[in-house]
Length: 457
Image 1 (cartoon, one colour):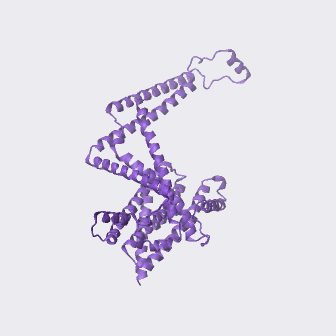
Image 2 (cartoon, helix red, strand yellow):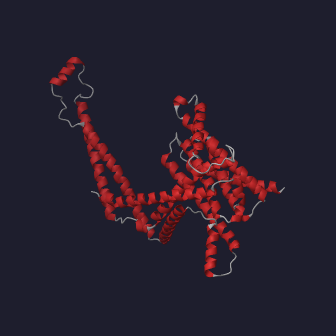
Image 3 (cartoon, one colour):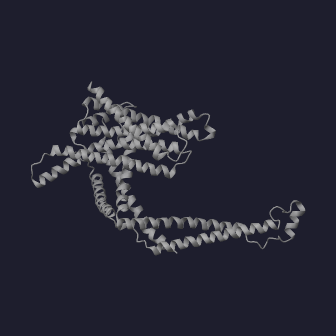
């Protein structure tokens, strides 16, 4: 009876997660598109629902909600379904919609879709060769074999986003990195933009008048034809030879239009920077500025710890919360129930990680979709986002496991199988360090070149 009640709770929560994914698909991703594929919408919502269910089960592990056997069953079923979606269903439909957009392959799209899926499976399976994730104890299609490869892709993606976010967040929040933009700078740039627009209008007007004059003189429709006409055009001067070269003027117009687009973007950037300067003077802006300094310290600490972990090849055995409380208690020499408080603080920490991960990923996916999508490619891109989202959340479970006390890792470890958990944490540190250092270099060059660009005449 308890199993039925537990299953009812899980099914109800999955329906709610599915509905949220459906609304996010309709209200955010596809709000500007009339053509929607029902199967794409269902796959995206199902992937989102089962991804969120894994996080829900992590919280249930800490709070001891549901029976232990029920949690184990739903962990197992949830992982099987999400792996089925990520490895078999989504790649097949991505290939199907890619082939459907090619007219030459439209009649045989099912055959070519299967070929693309087999190609994906080959590279997906070969992905395990360079990494220490293979285990001869498990079958080819076992959970361990599939999740180990999904984990490599997902952890790589997480580390790249985390490294960039750790650097970009303080760069975005801190007023220290804001350029000093004055009204005079904006007026000067607007003046250049207006002068460029006037030059474009003047040259286009000149081209229109030239075409009109040529039409009135019969140069457009009354051109000489035939052999004698060709001889006449060579031996006599053209009545419009004194007219300017339209091709040369058109090239000048194209160059000026490109310059006007760049000036417009620079003007909009200056207005945005000025608004950020005004916003940084408010109470909320000062609060975010303080957060920027905090995240700067956090970024330096993460880079330092990632370097230490890589150099000394170490992975923490105890979760950070318990370890931090133990160090504090031993330093202060007070009586403190470490196990009790580590449970509650770990729950809060894991909850924050889960909420920020879901929110941050959905915001990133929305921006990415708007940047590259079109009416023809939108279905393929949504499926790619569903693939990324599922792998990201599966990898989050692998890494969040280390943030949980030992007694709460039991079922998760049993369900995930004999994975090389230490490898994933070391791999995360390596990719995070590369991503963070690359982001620092990129933002430094961008910040250094920005004032020079606006100071150019």
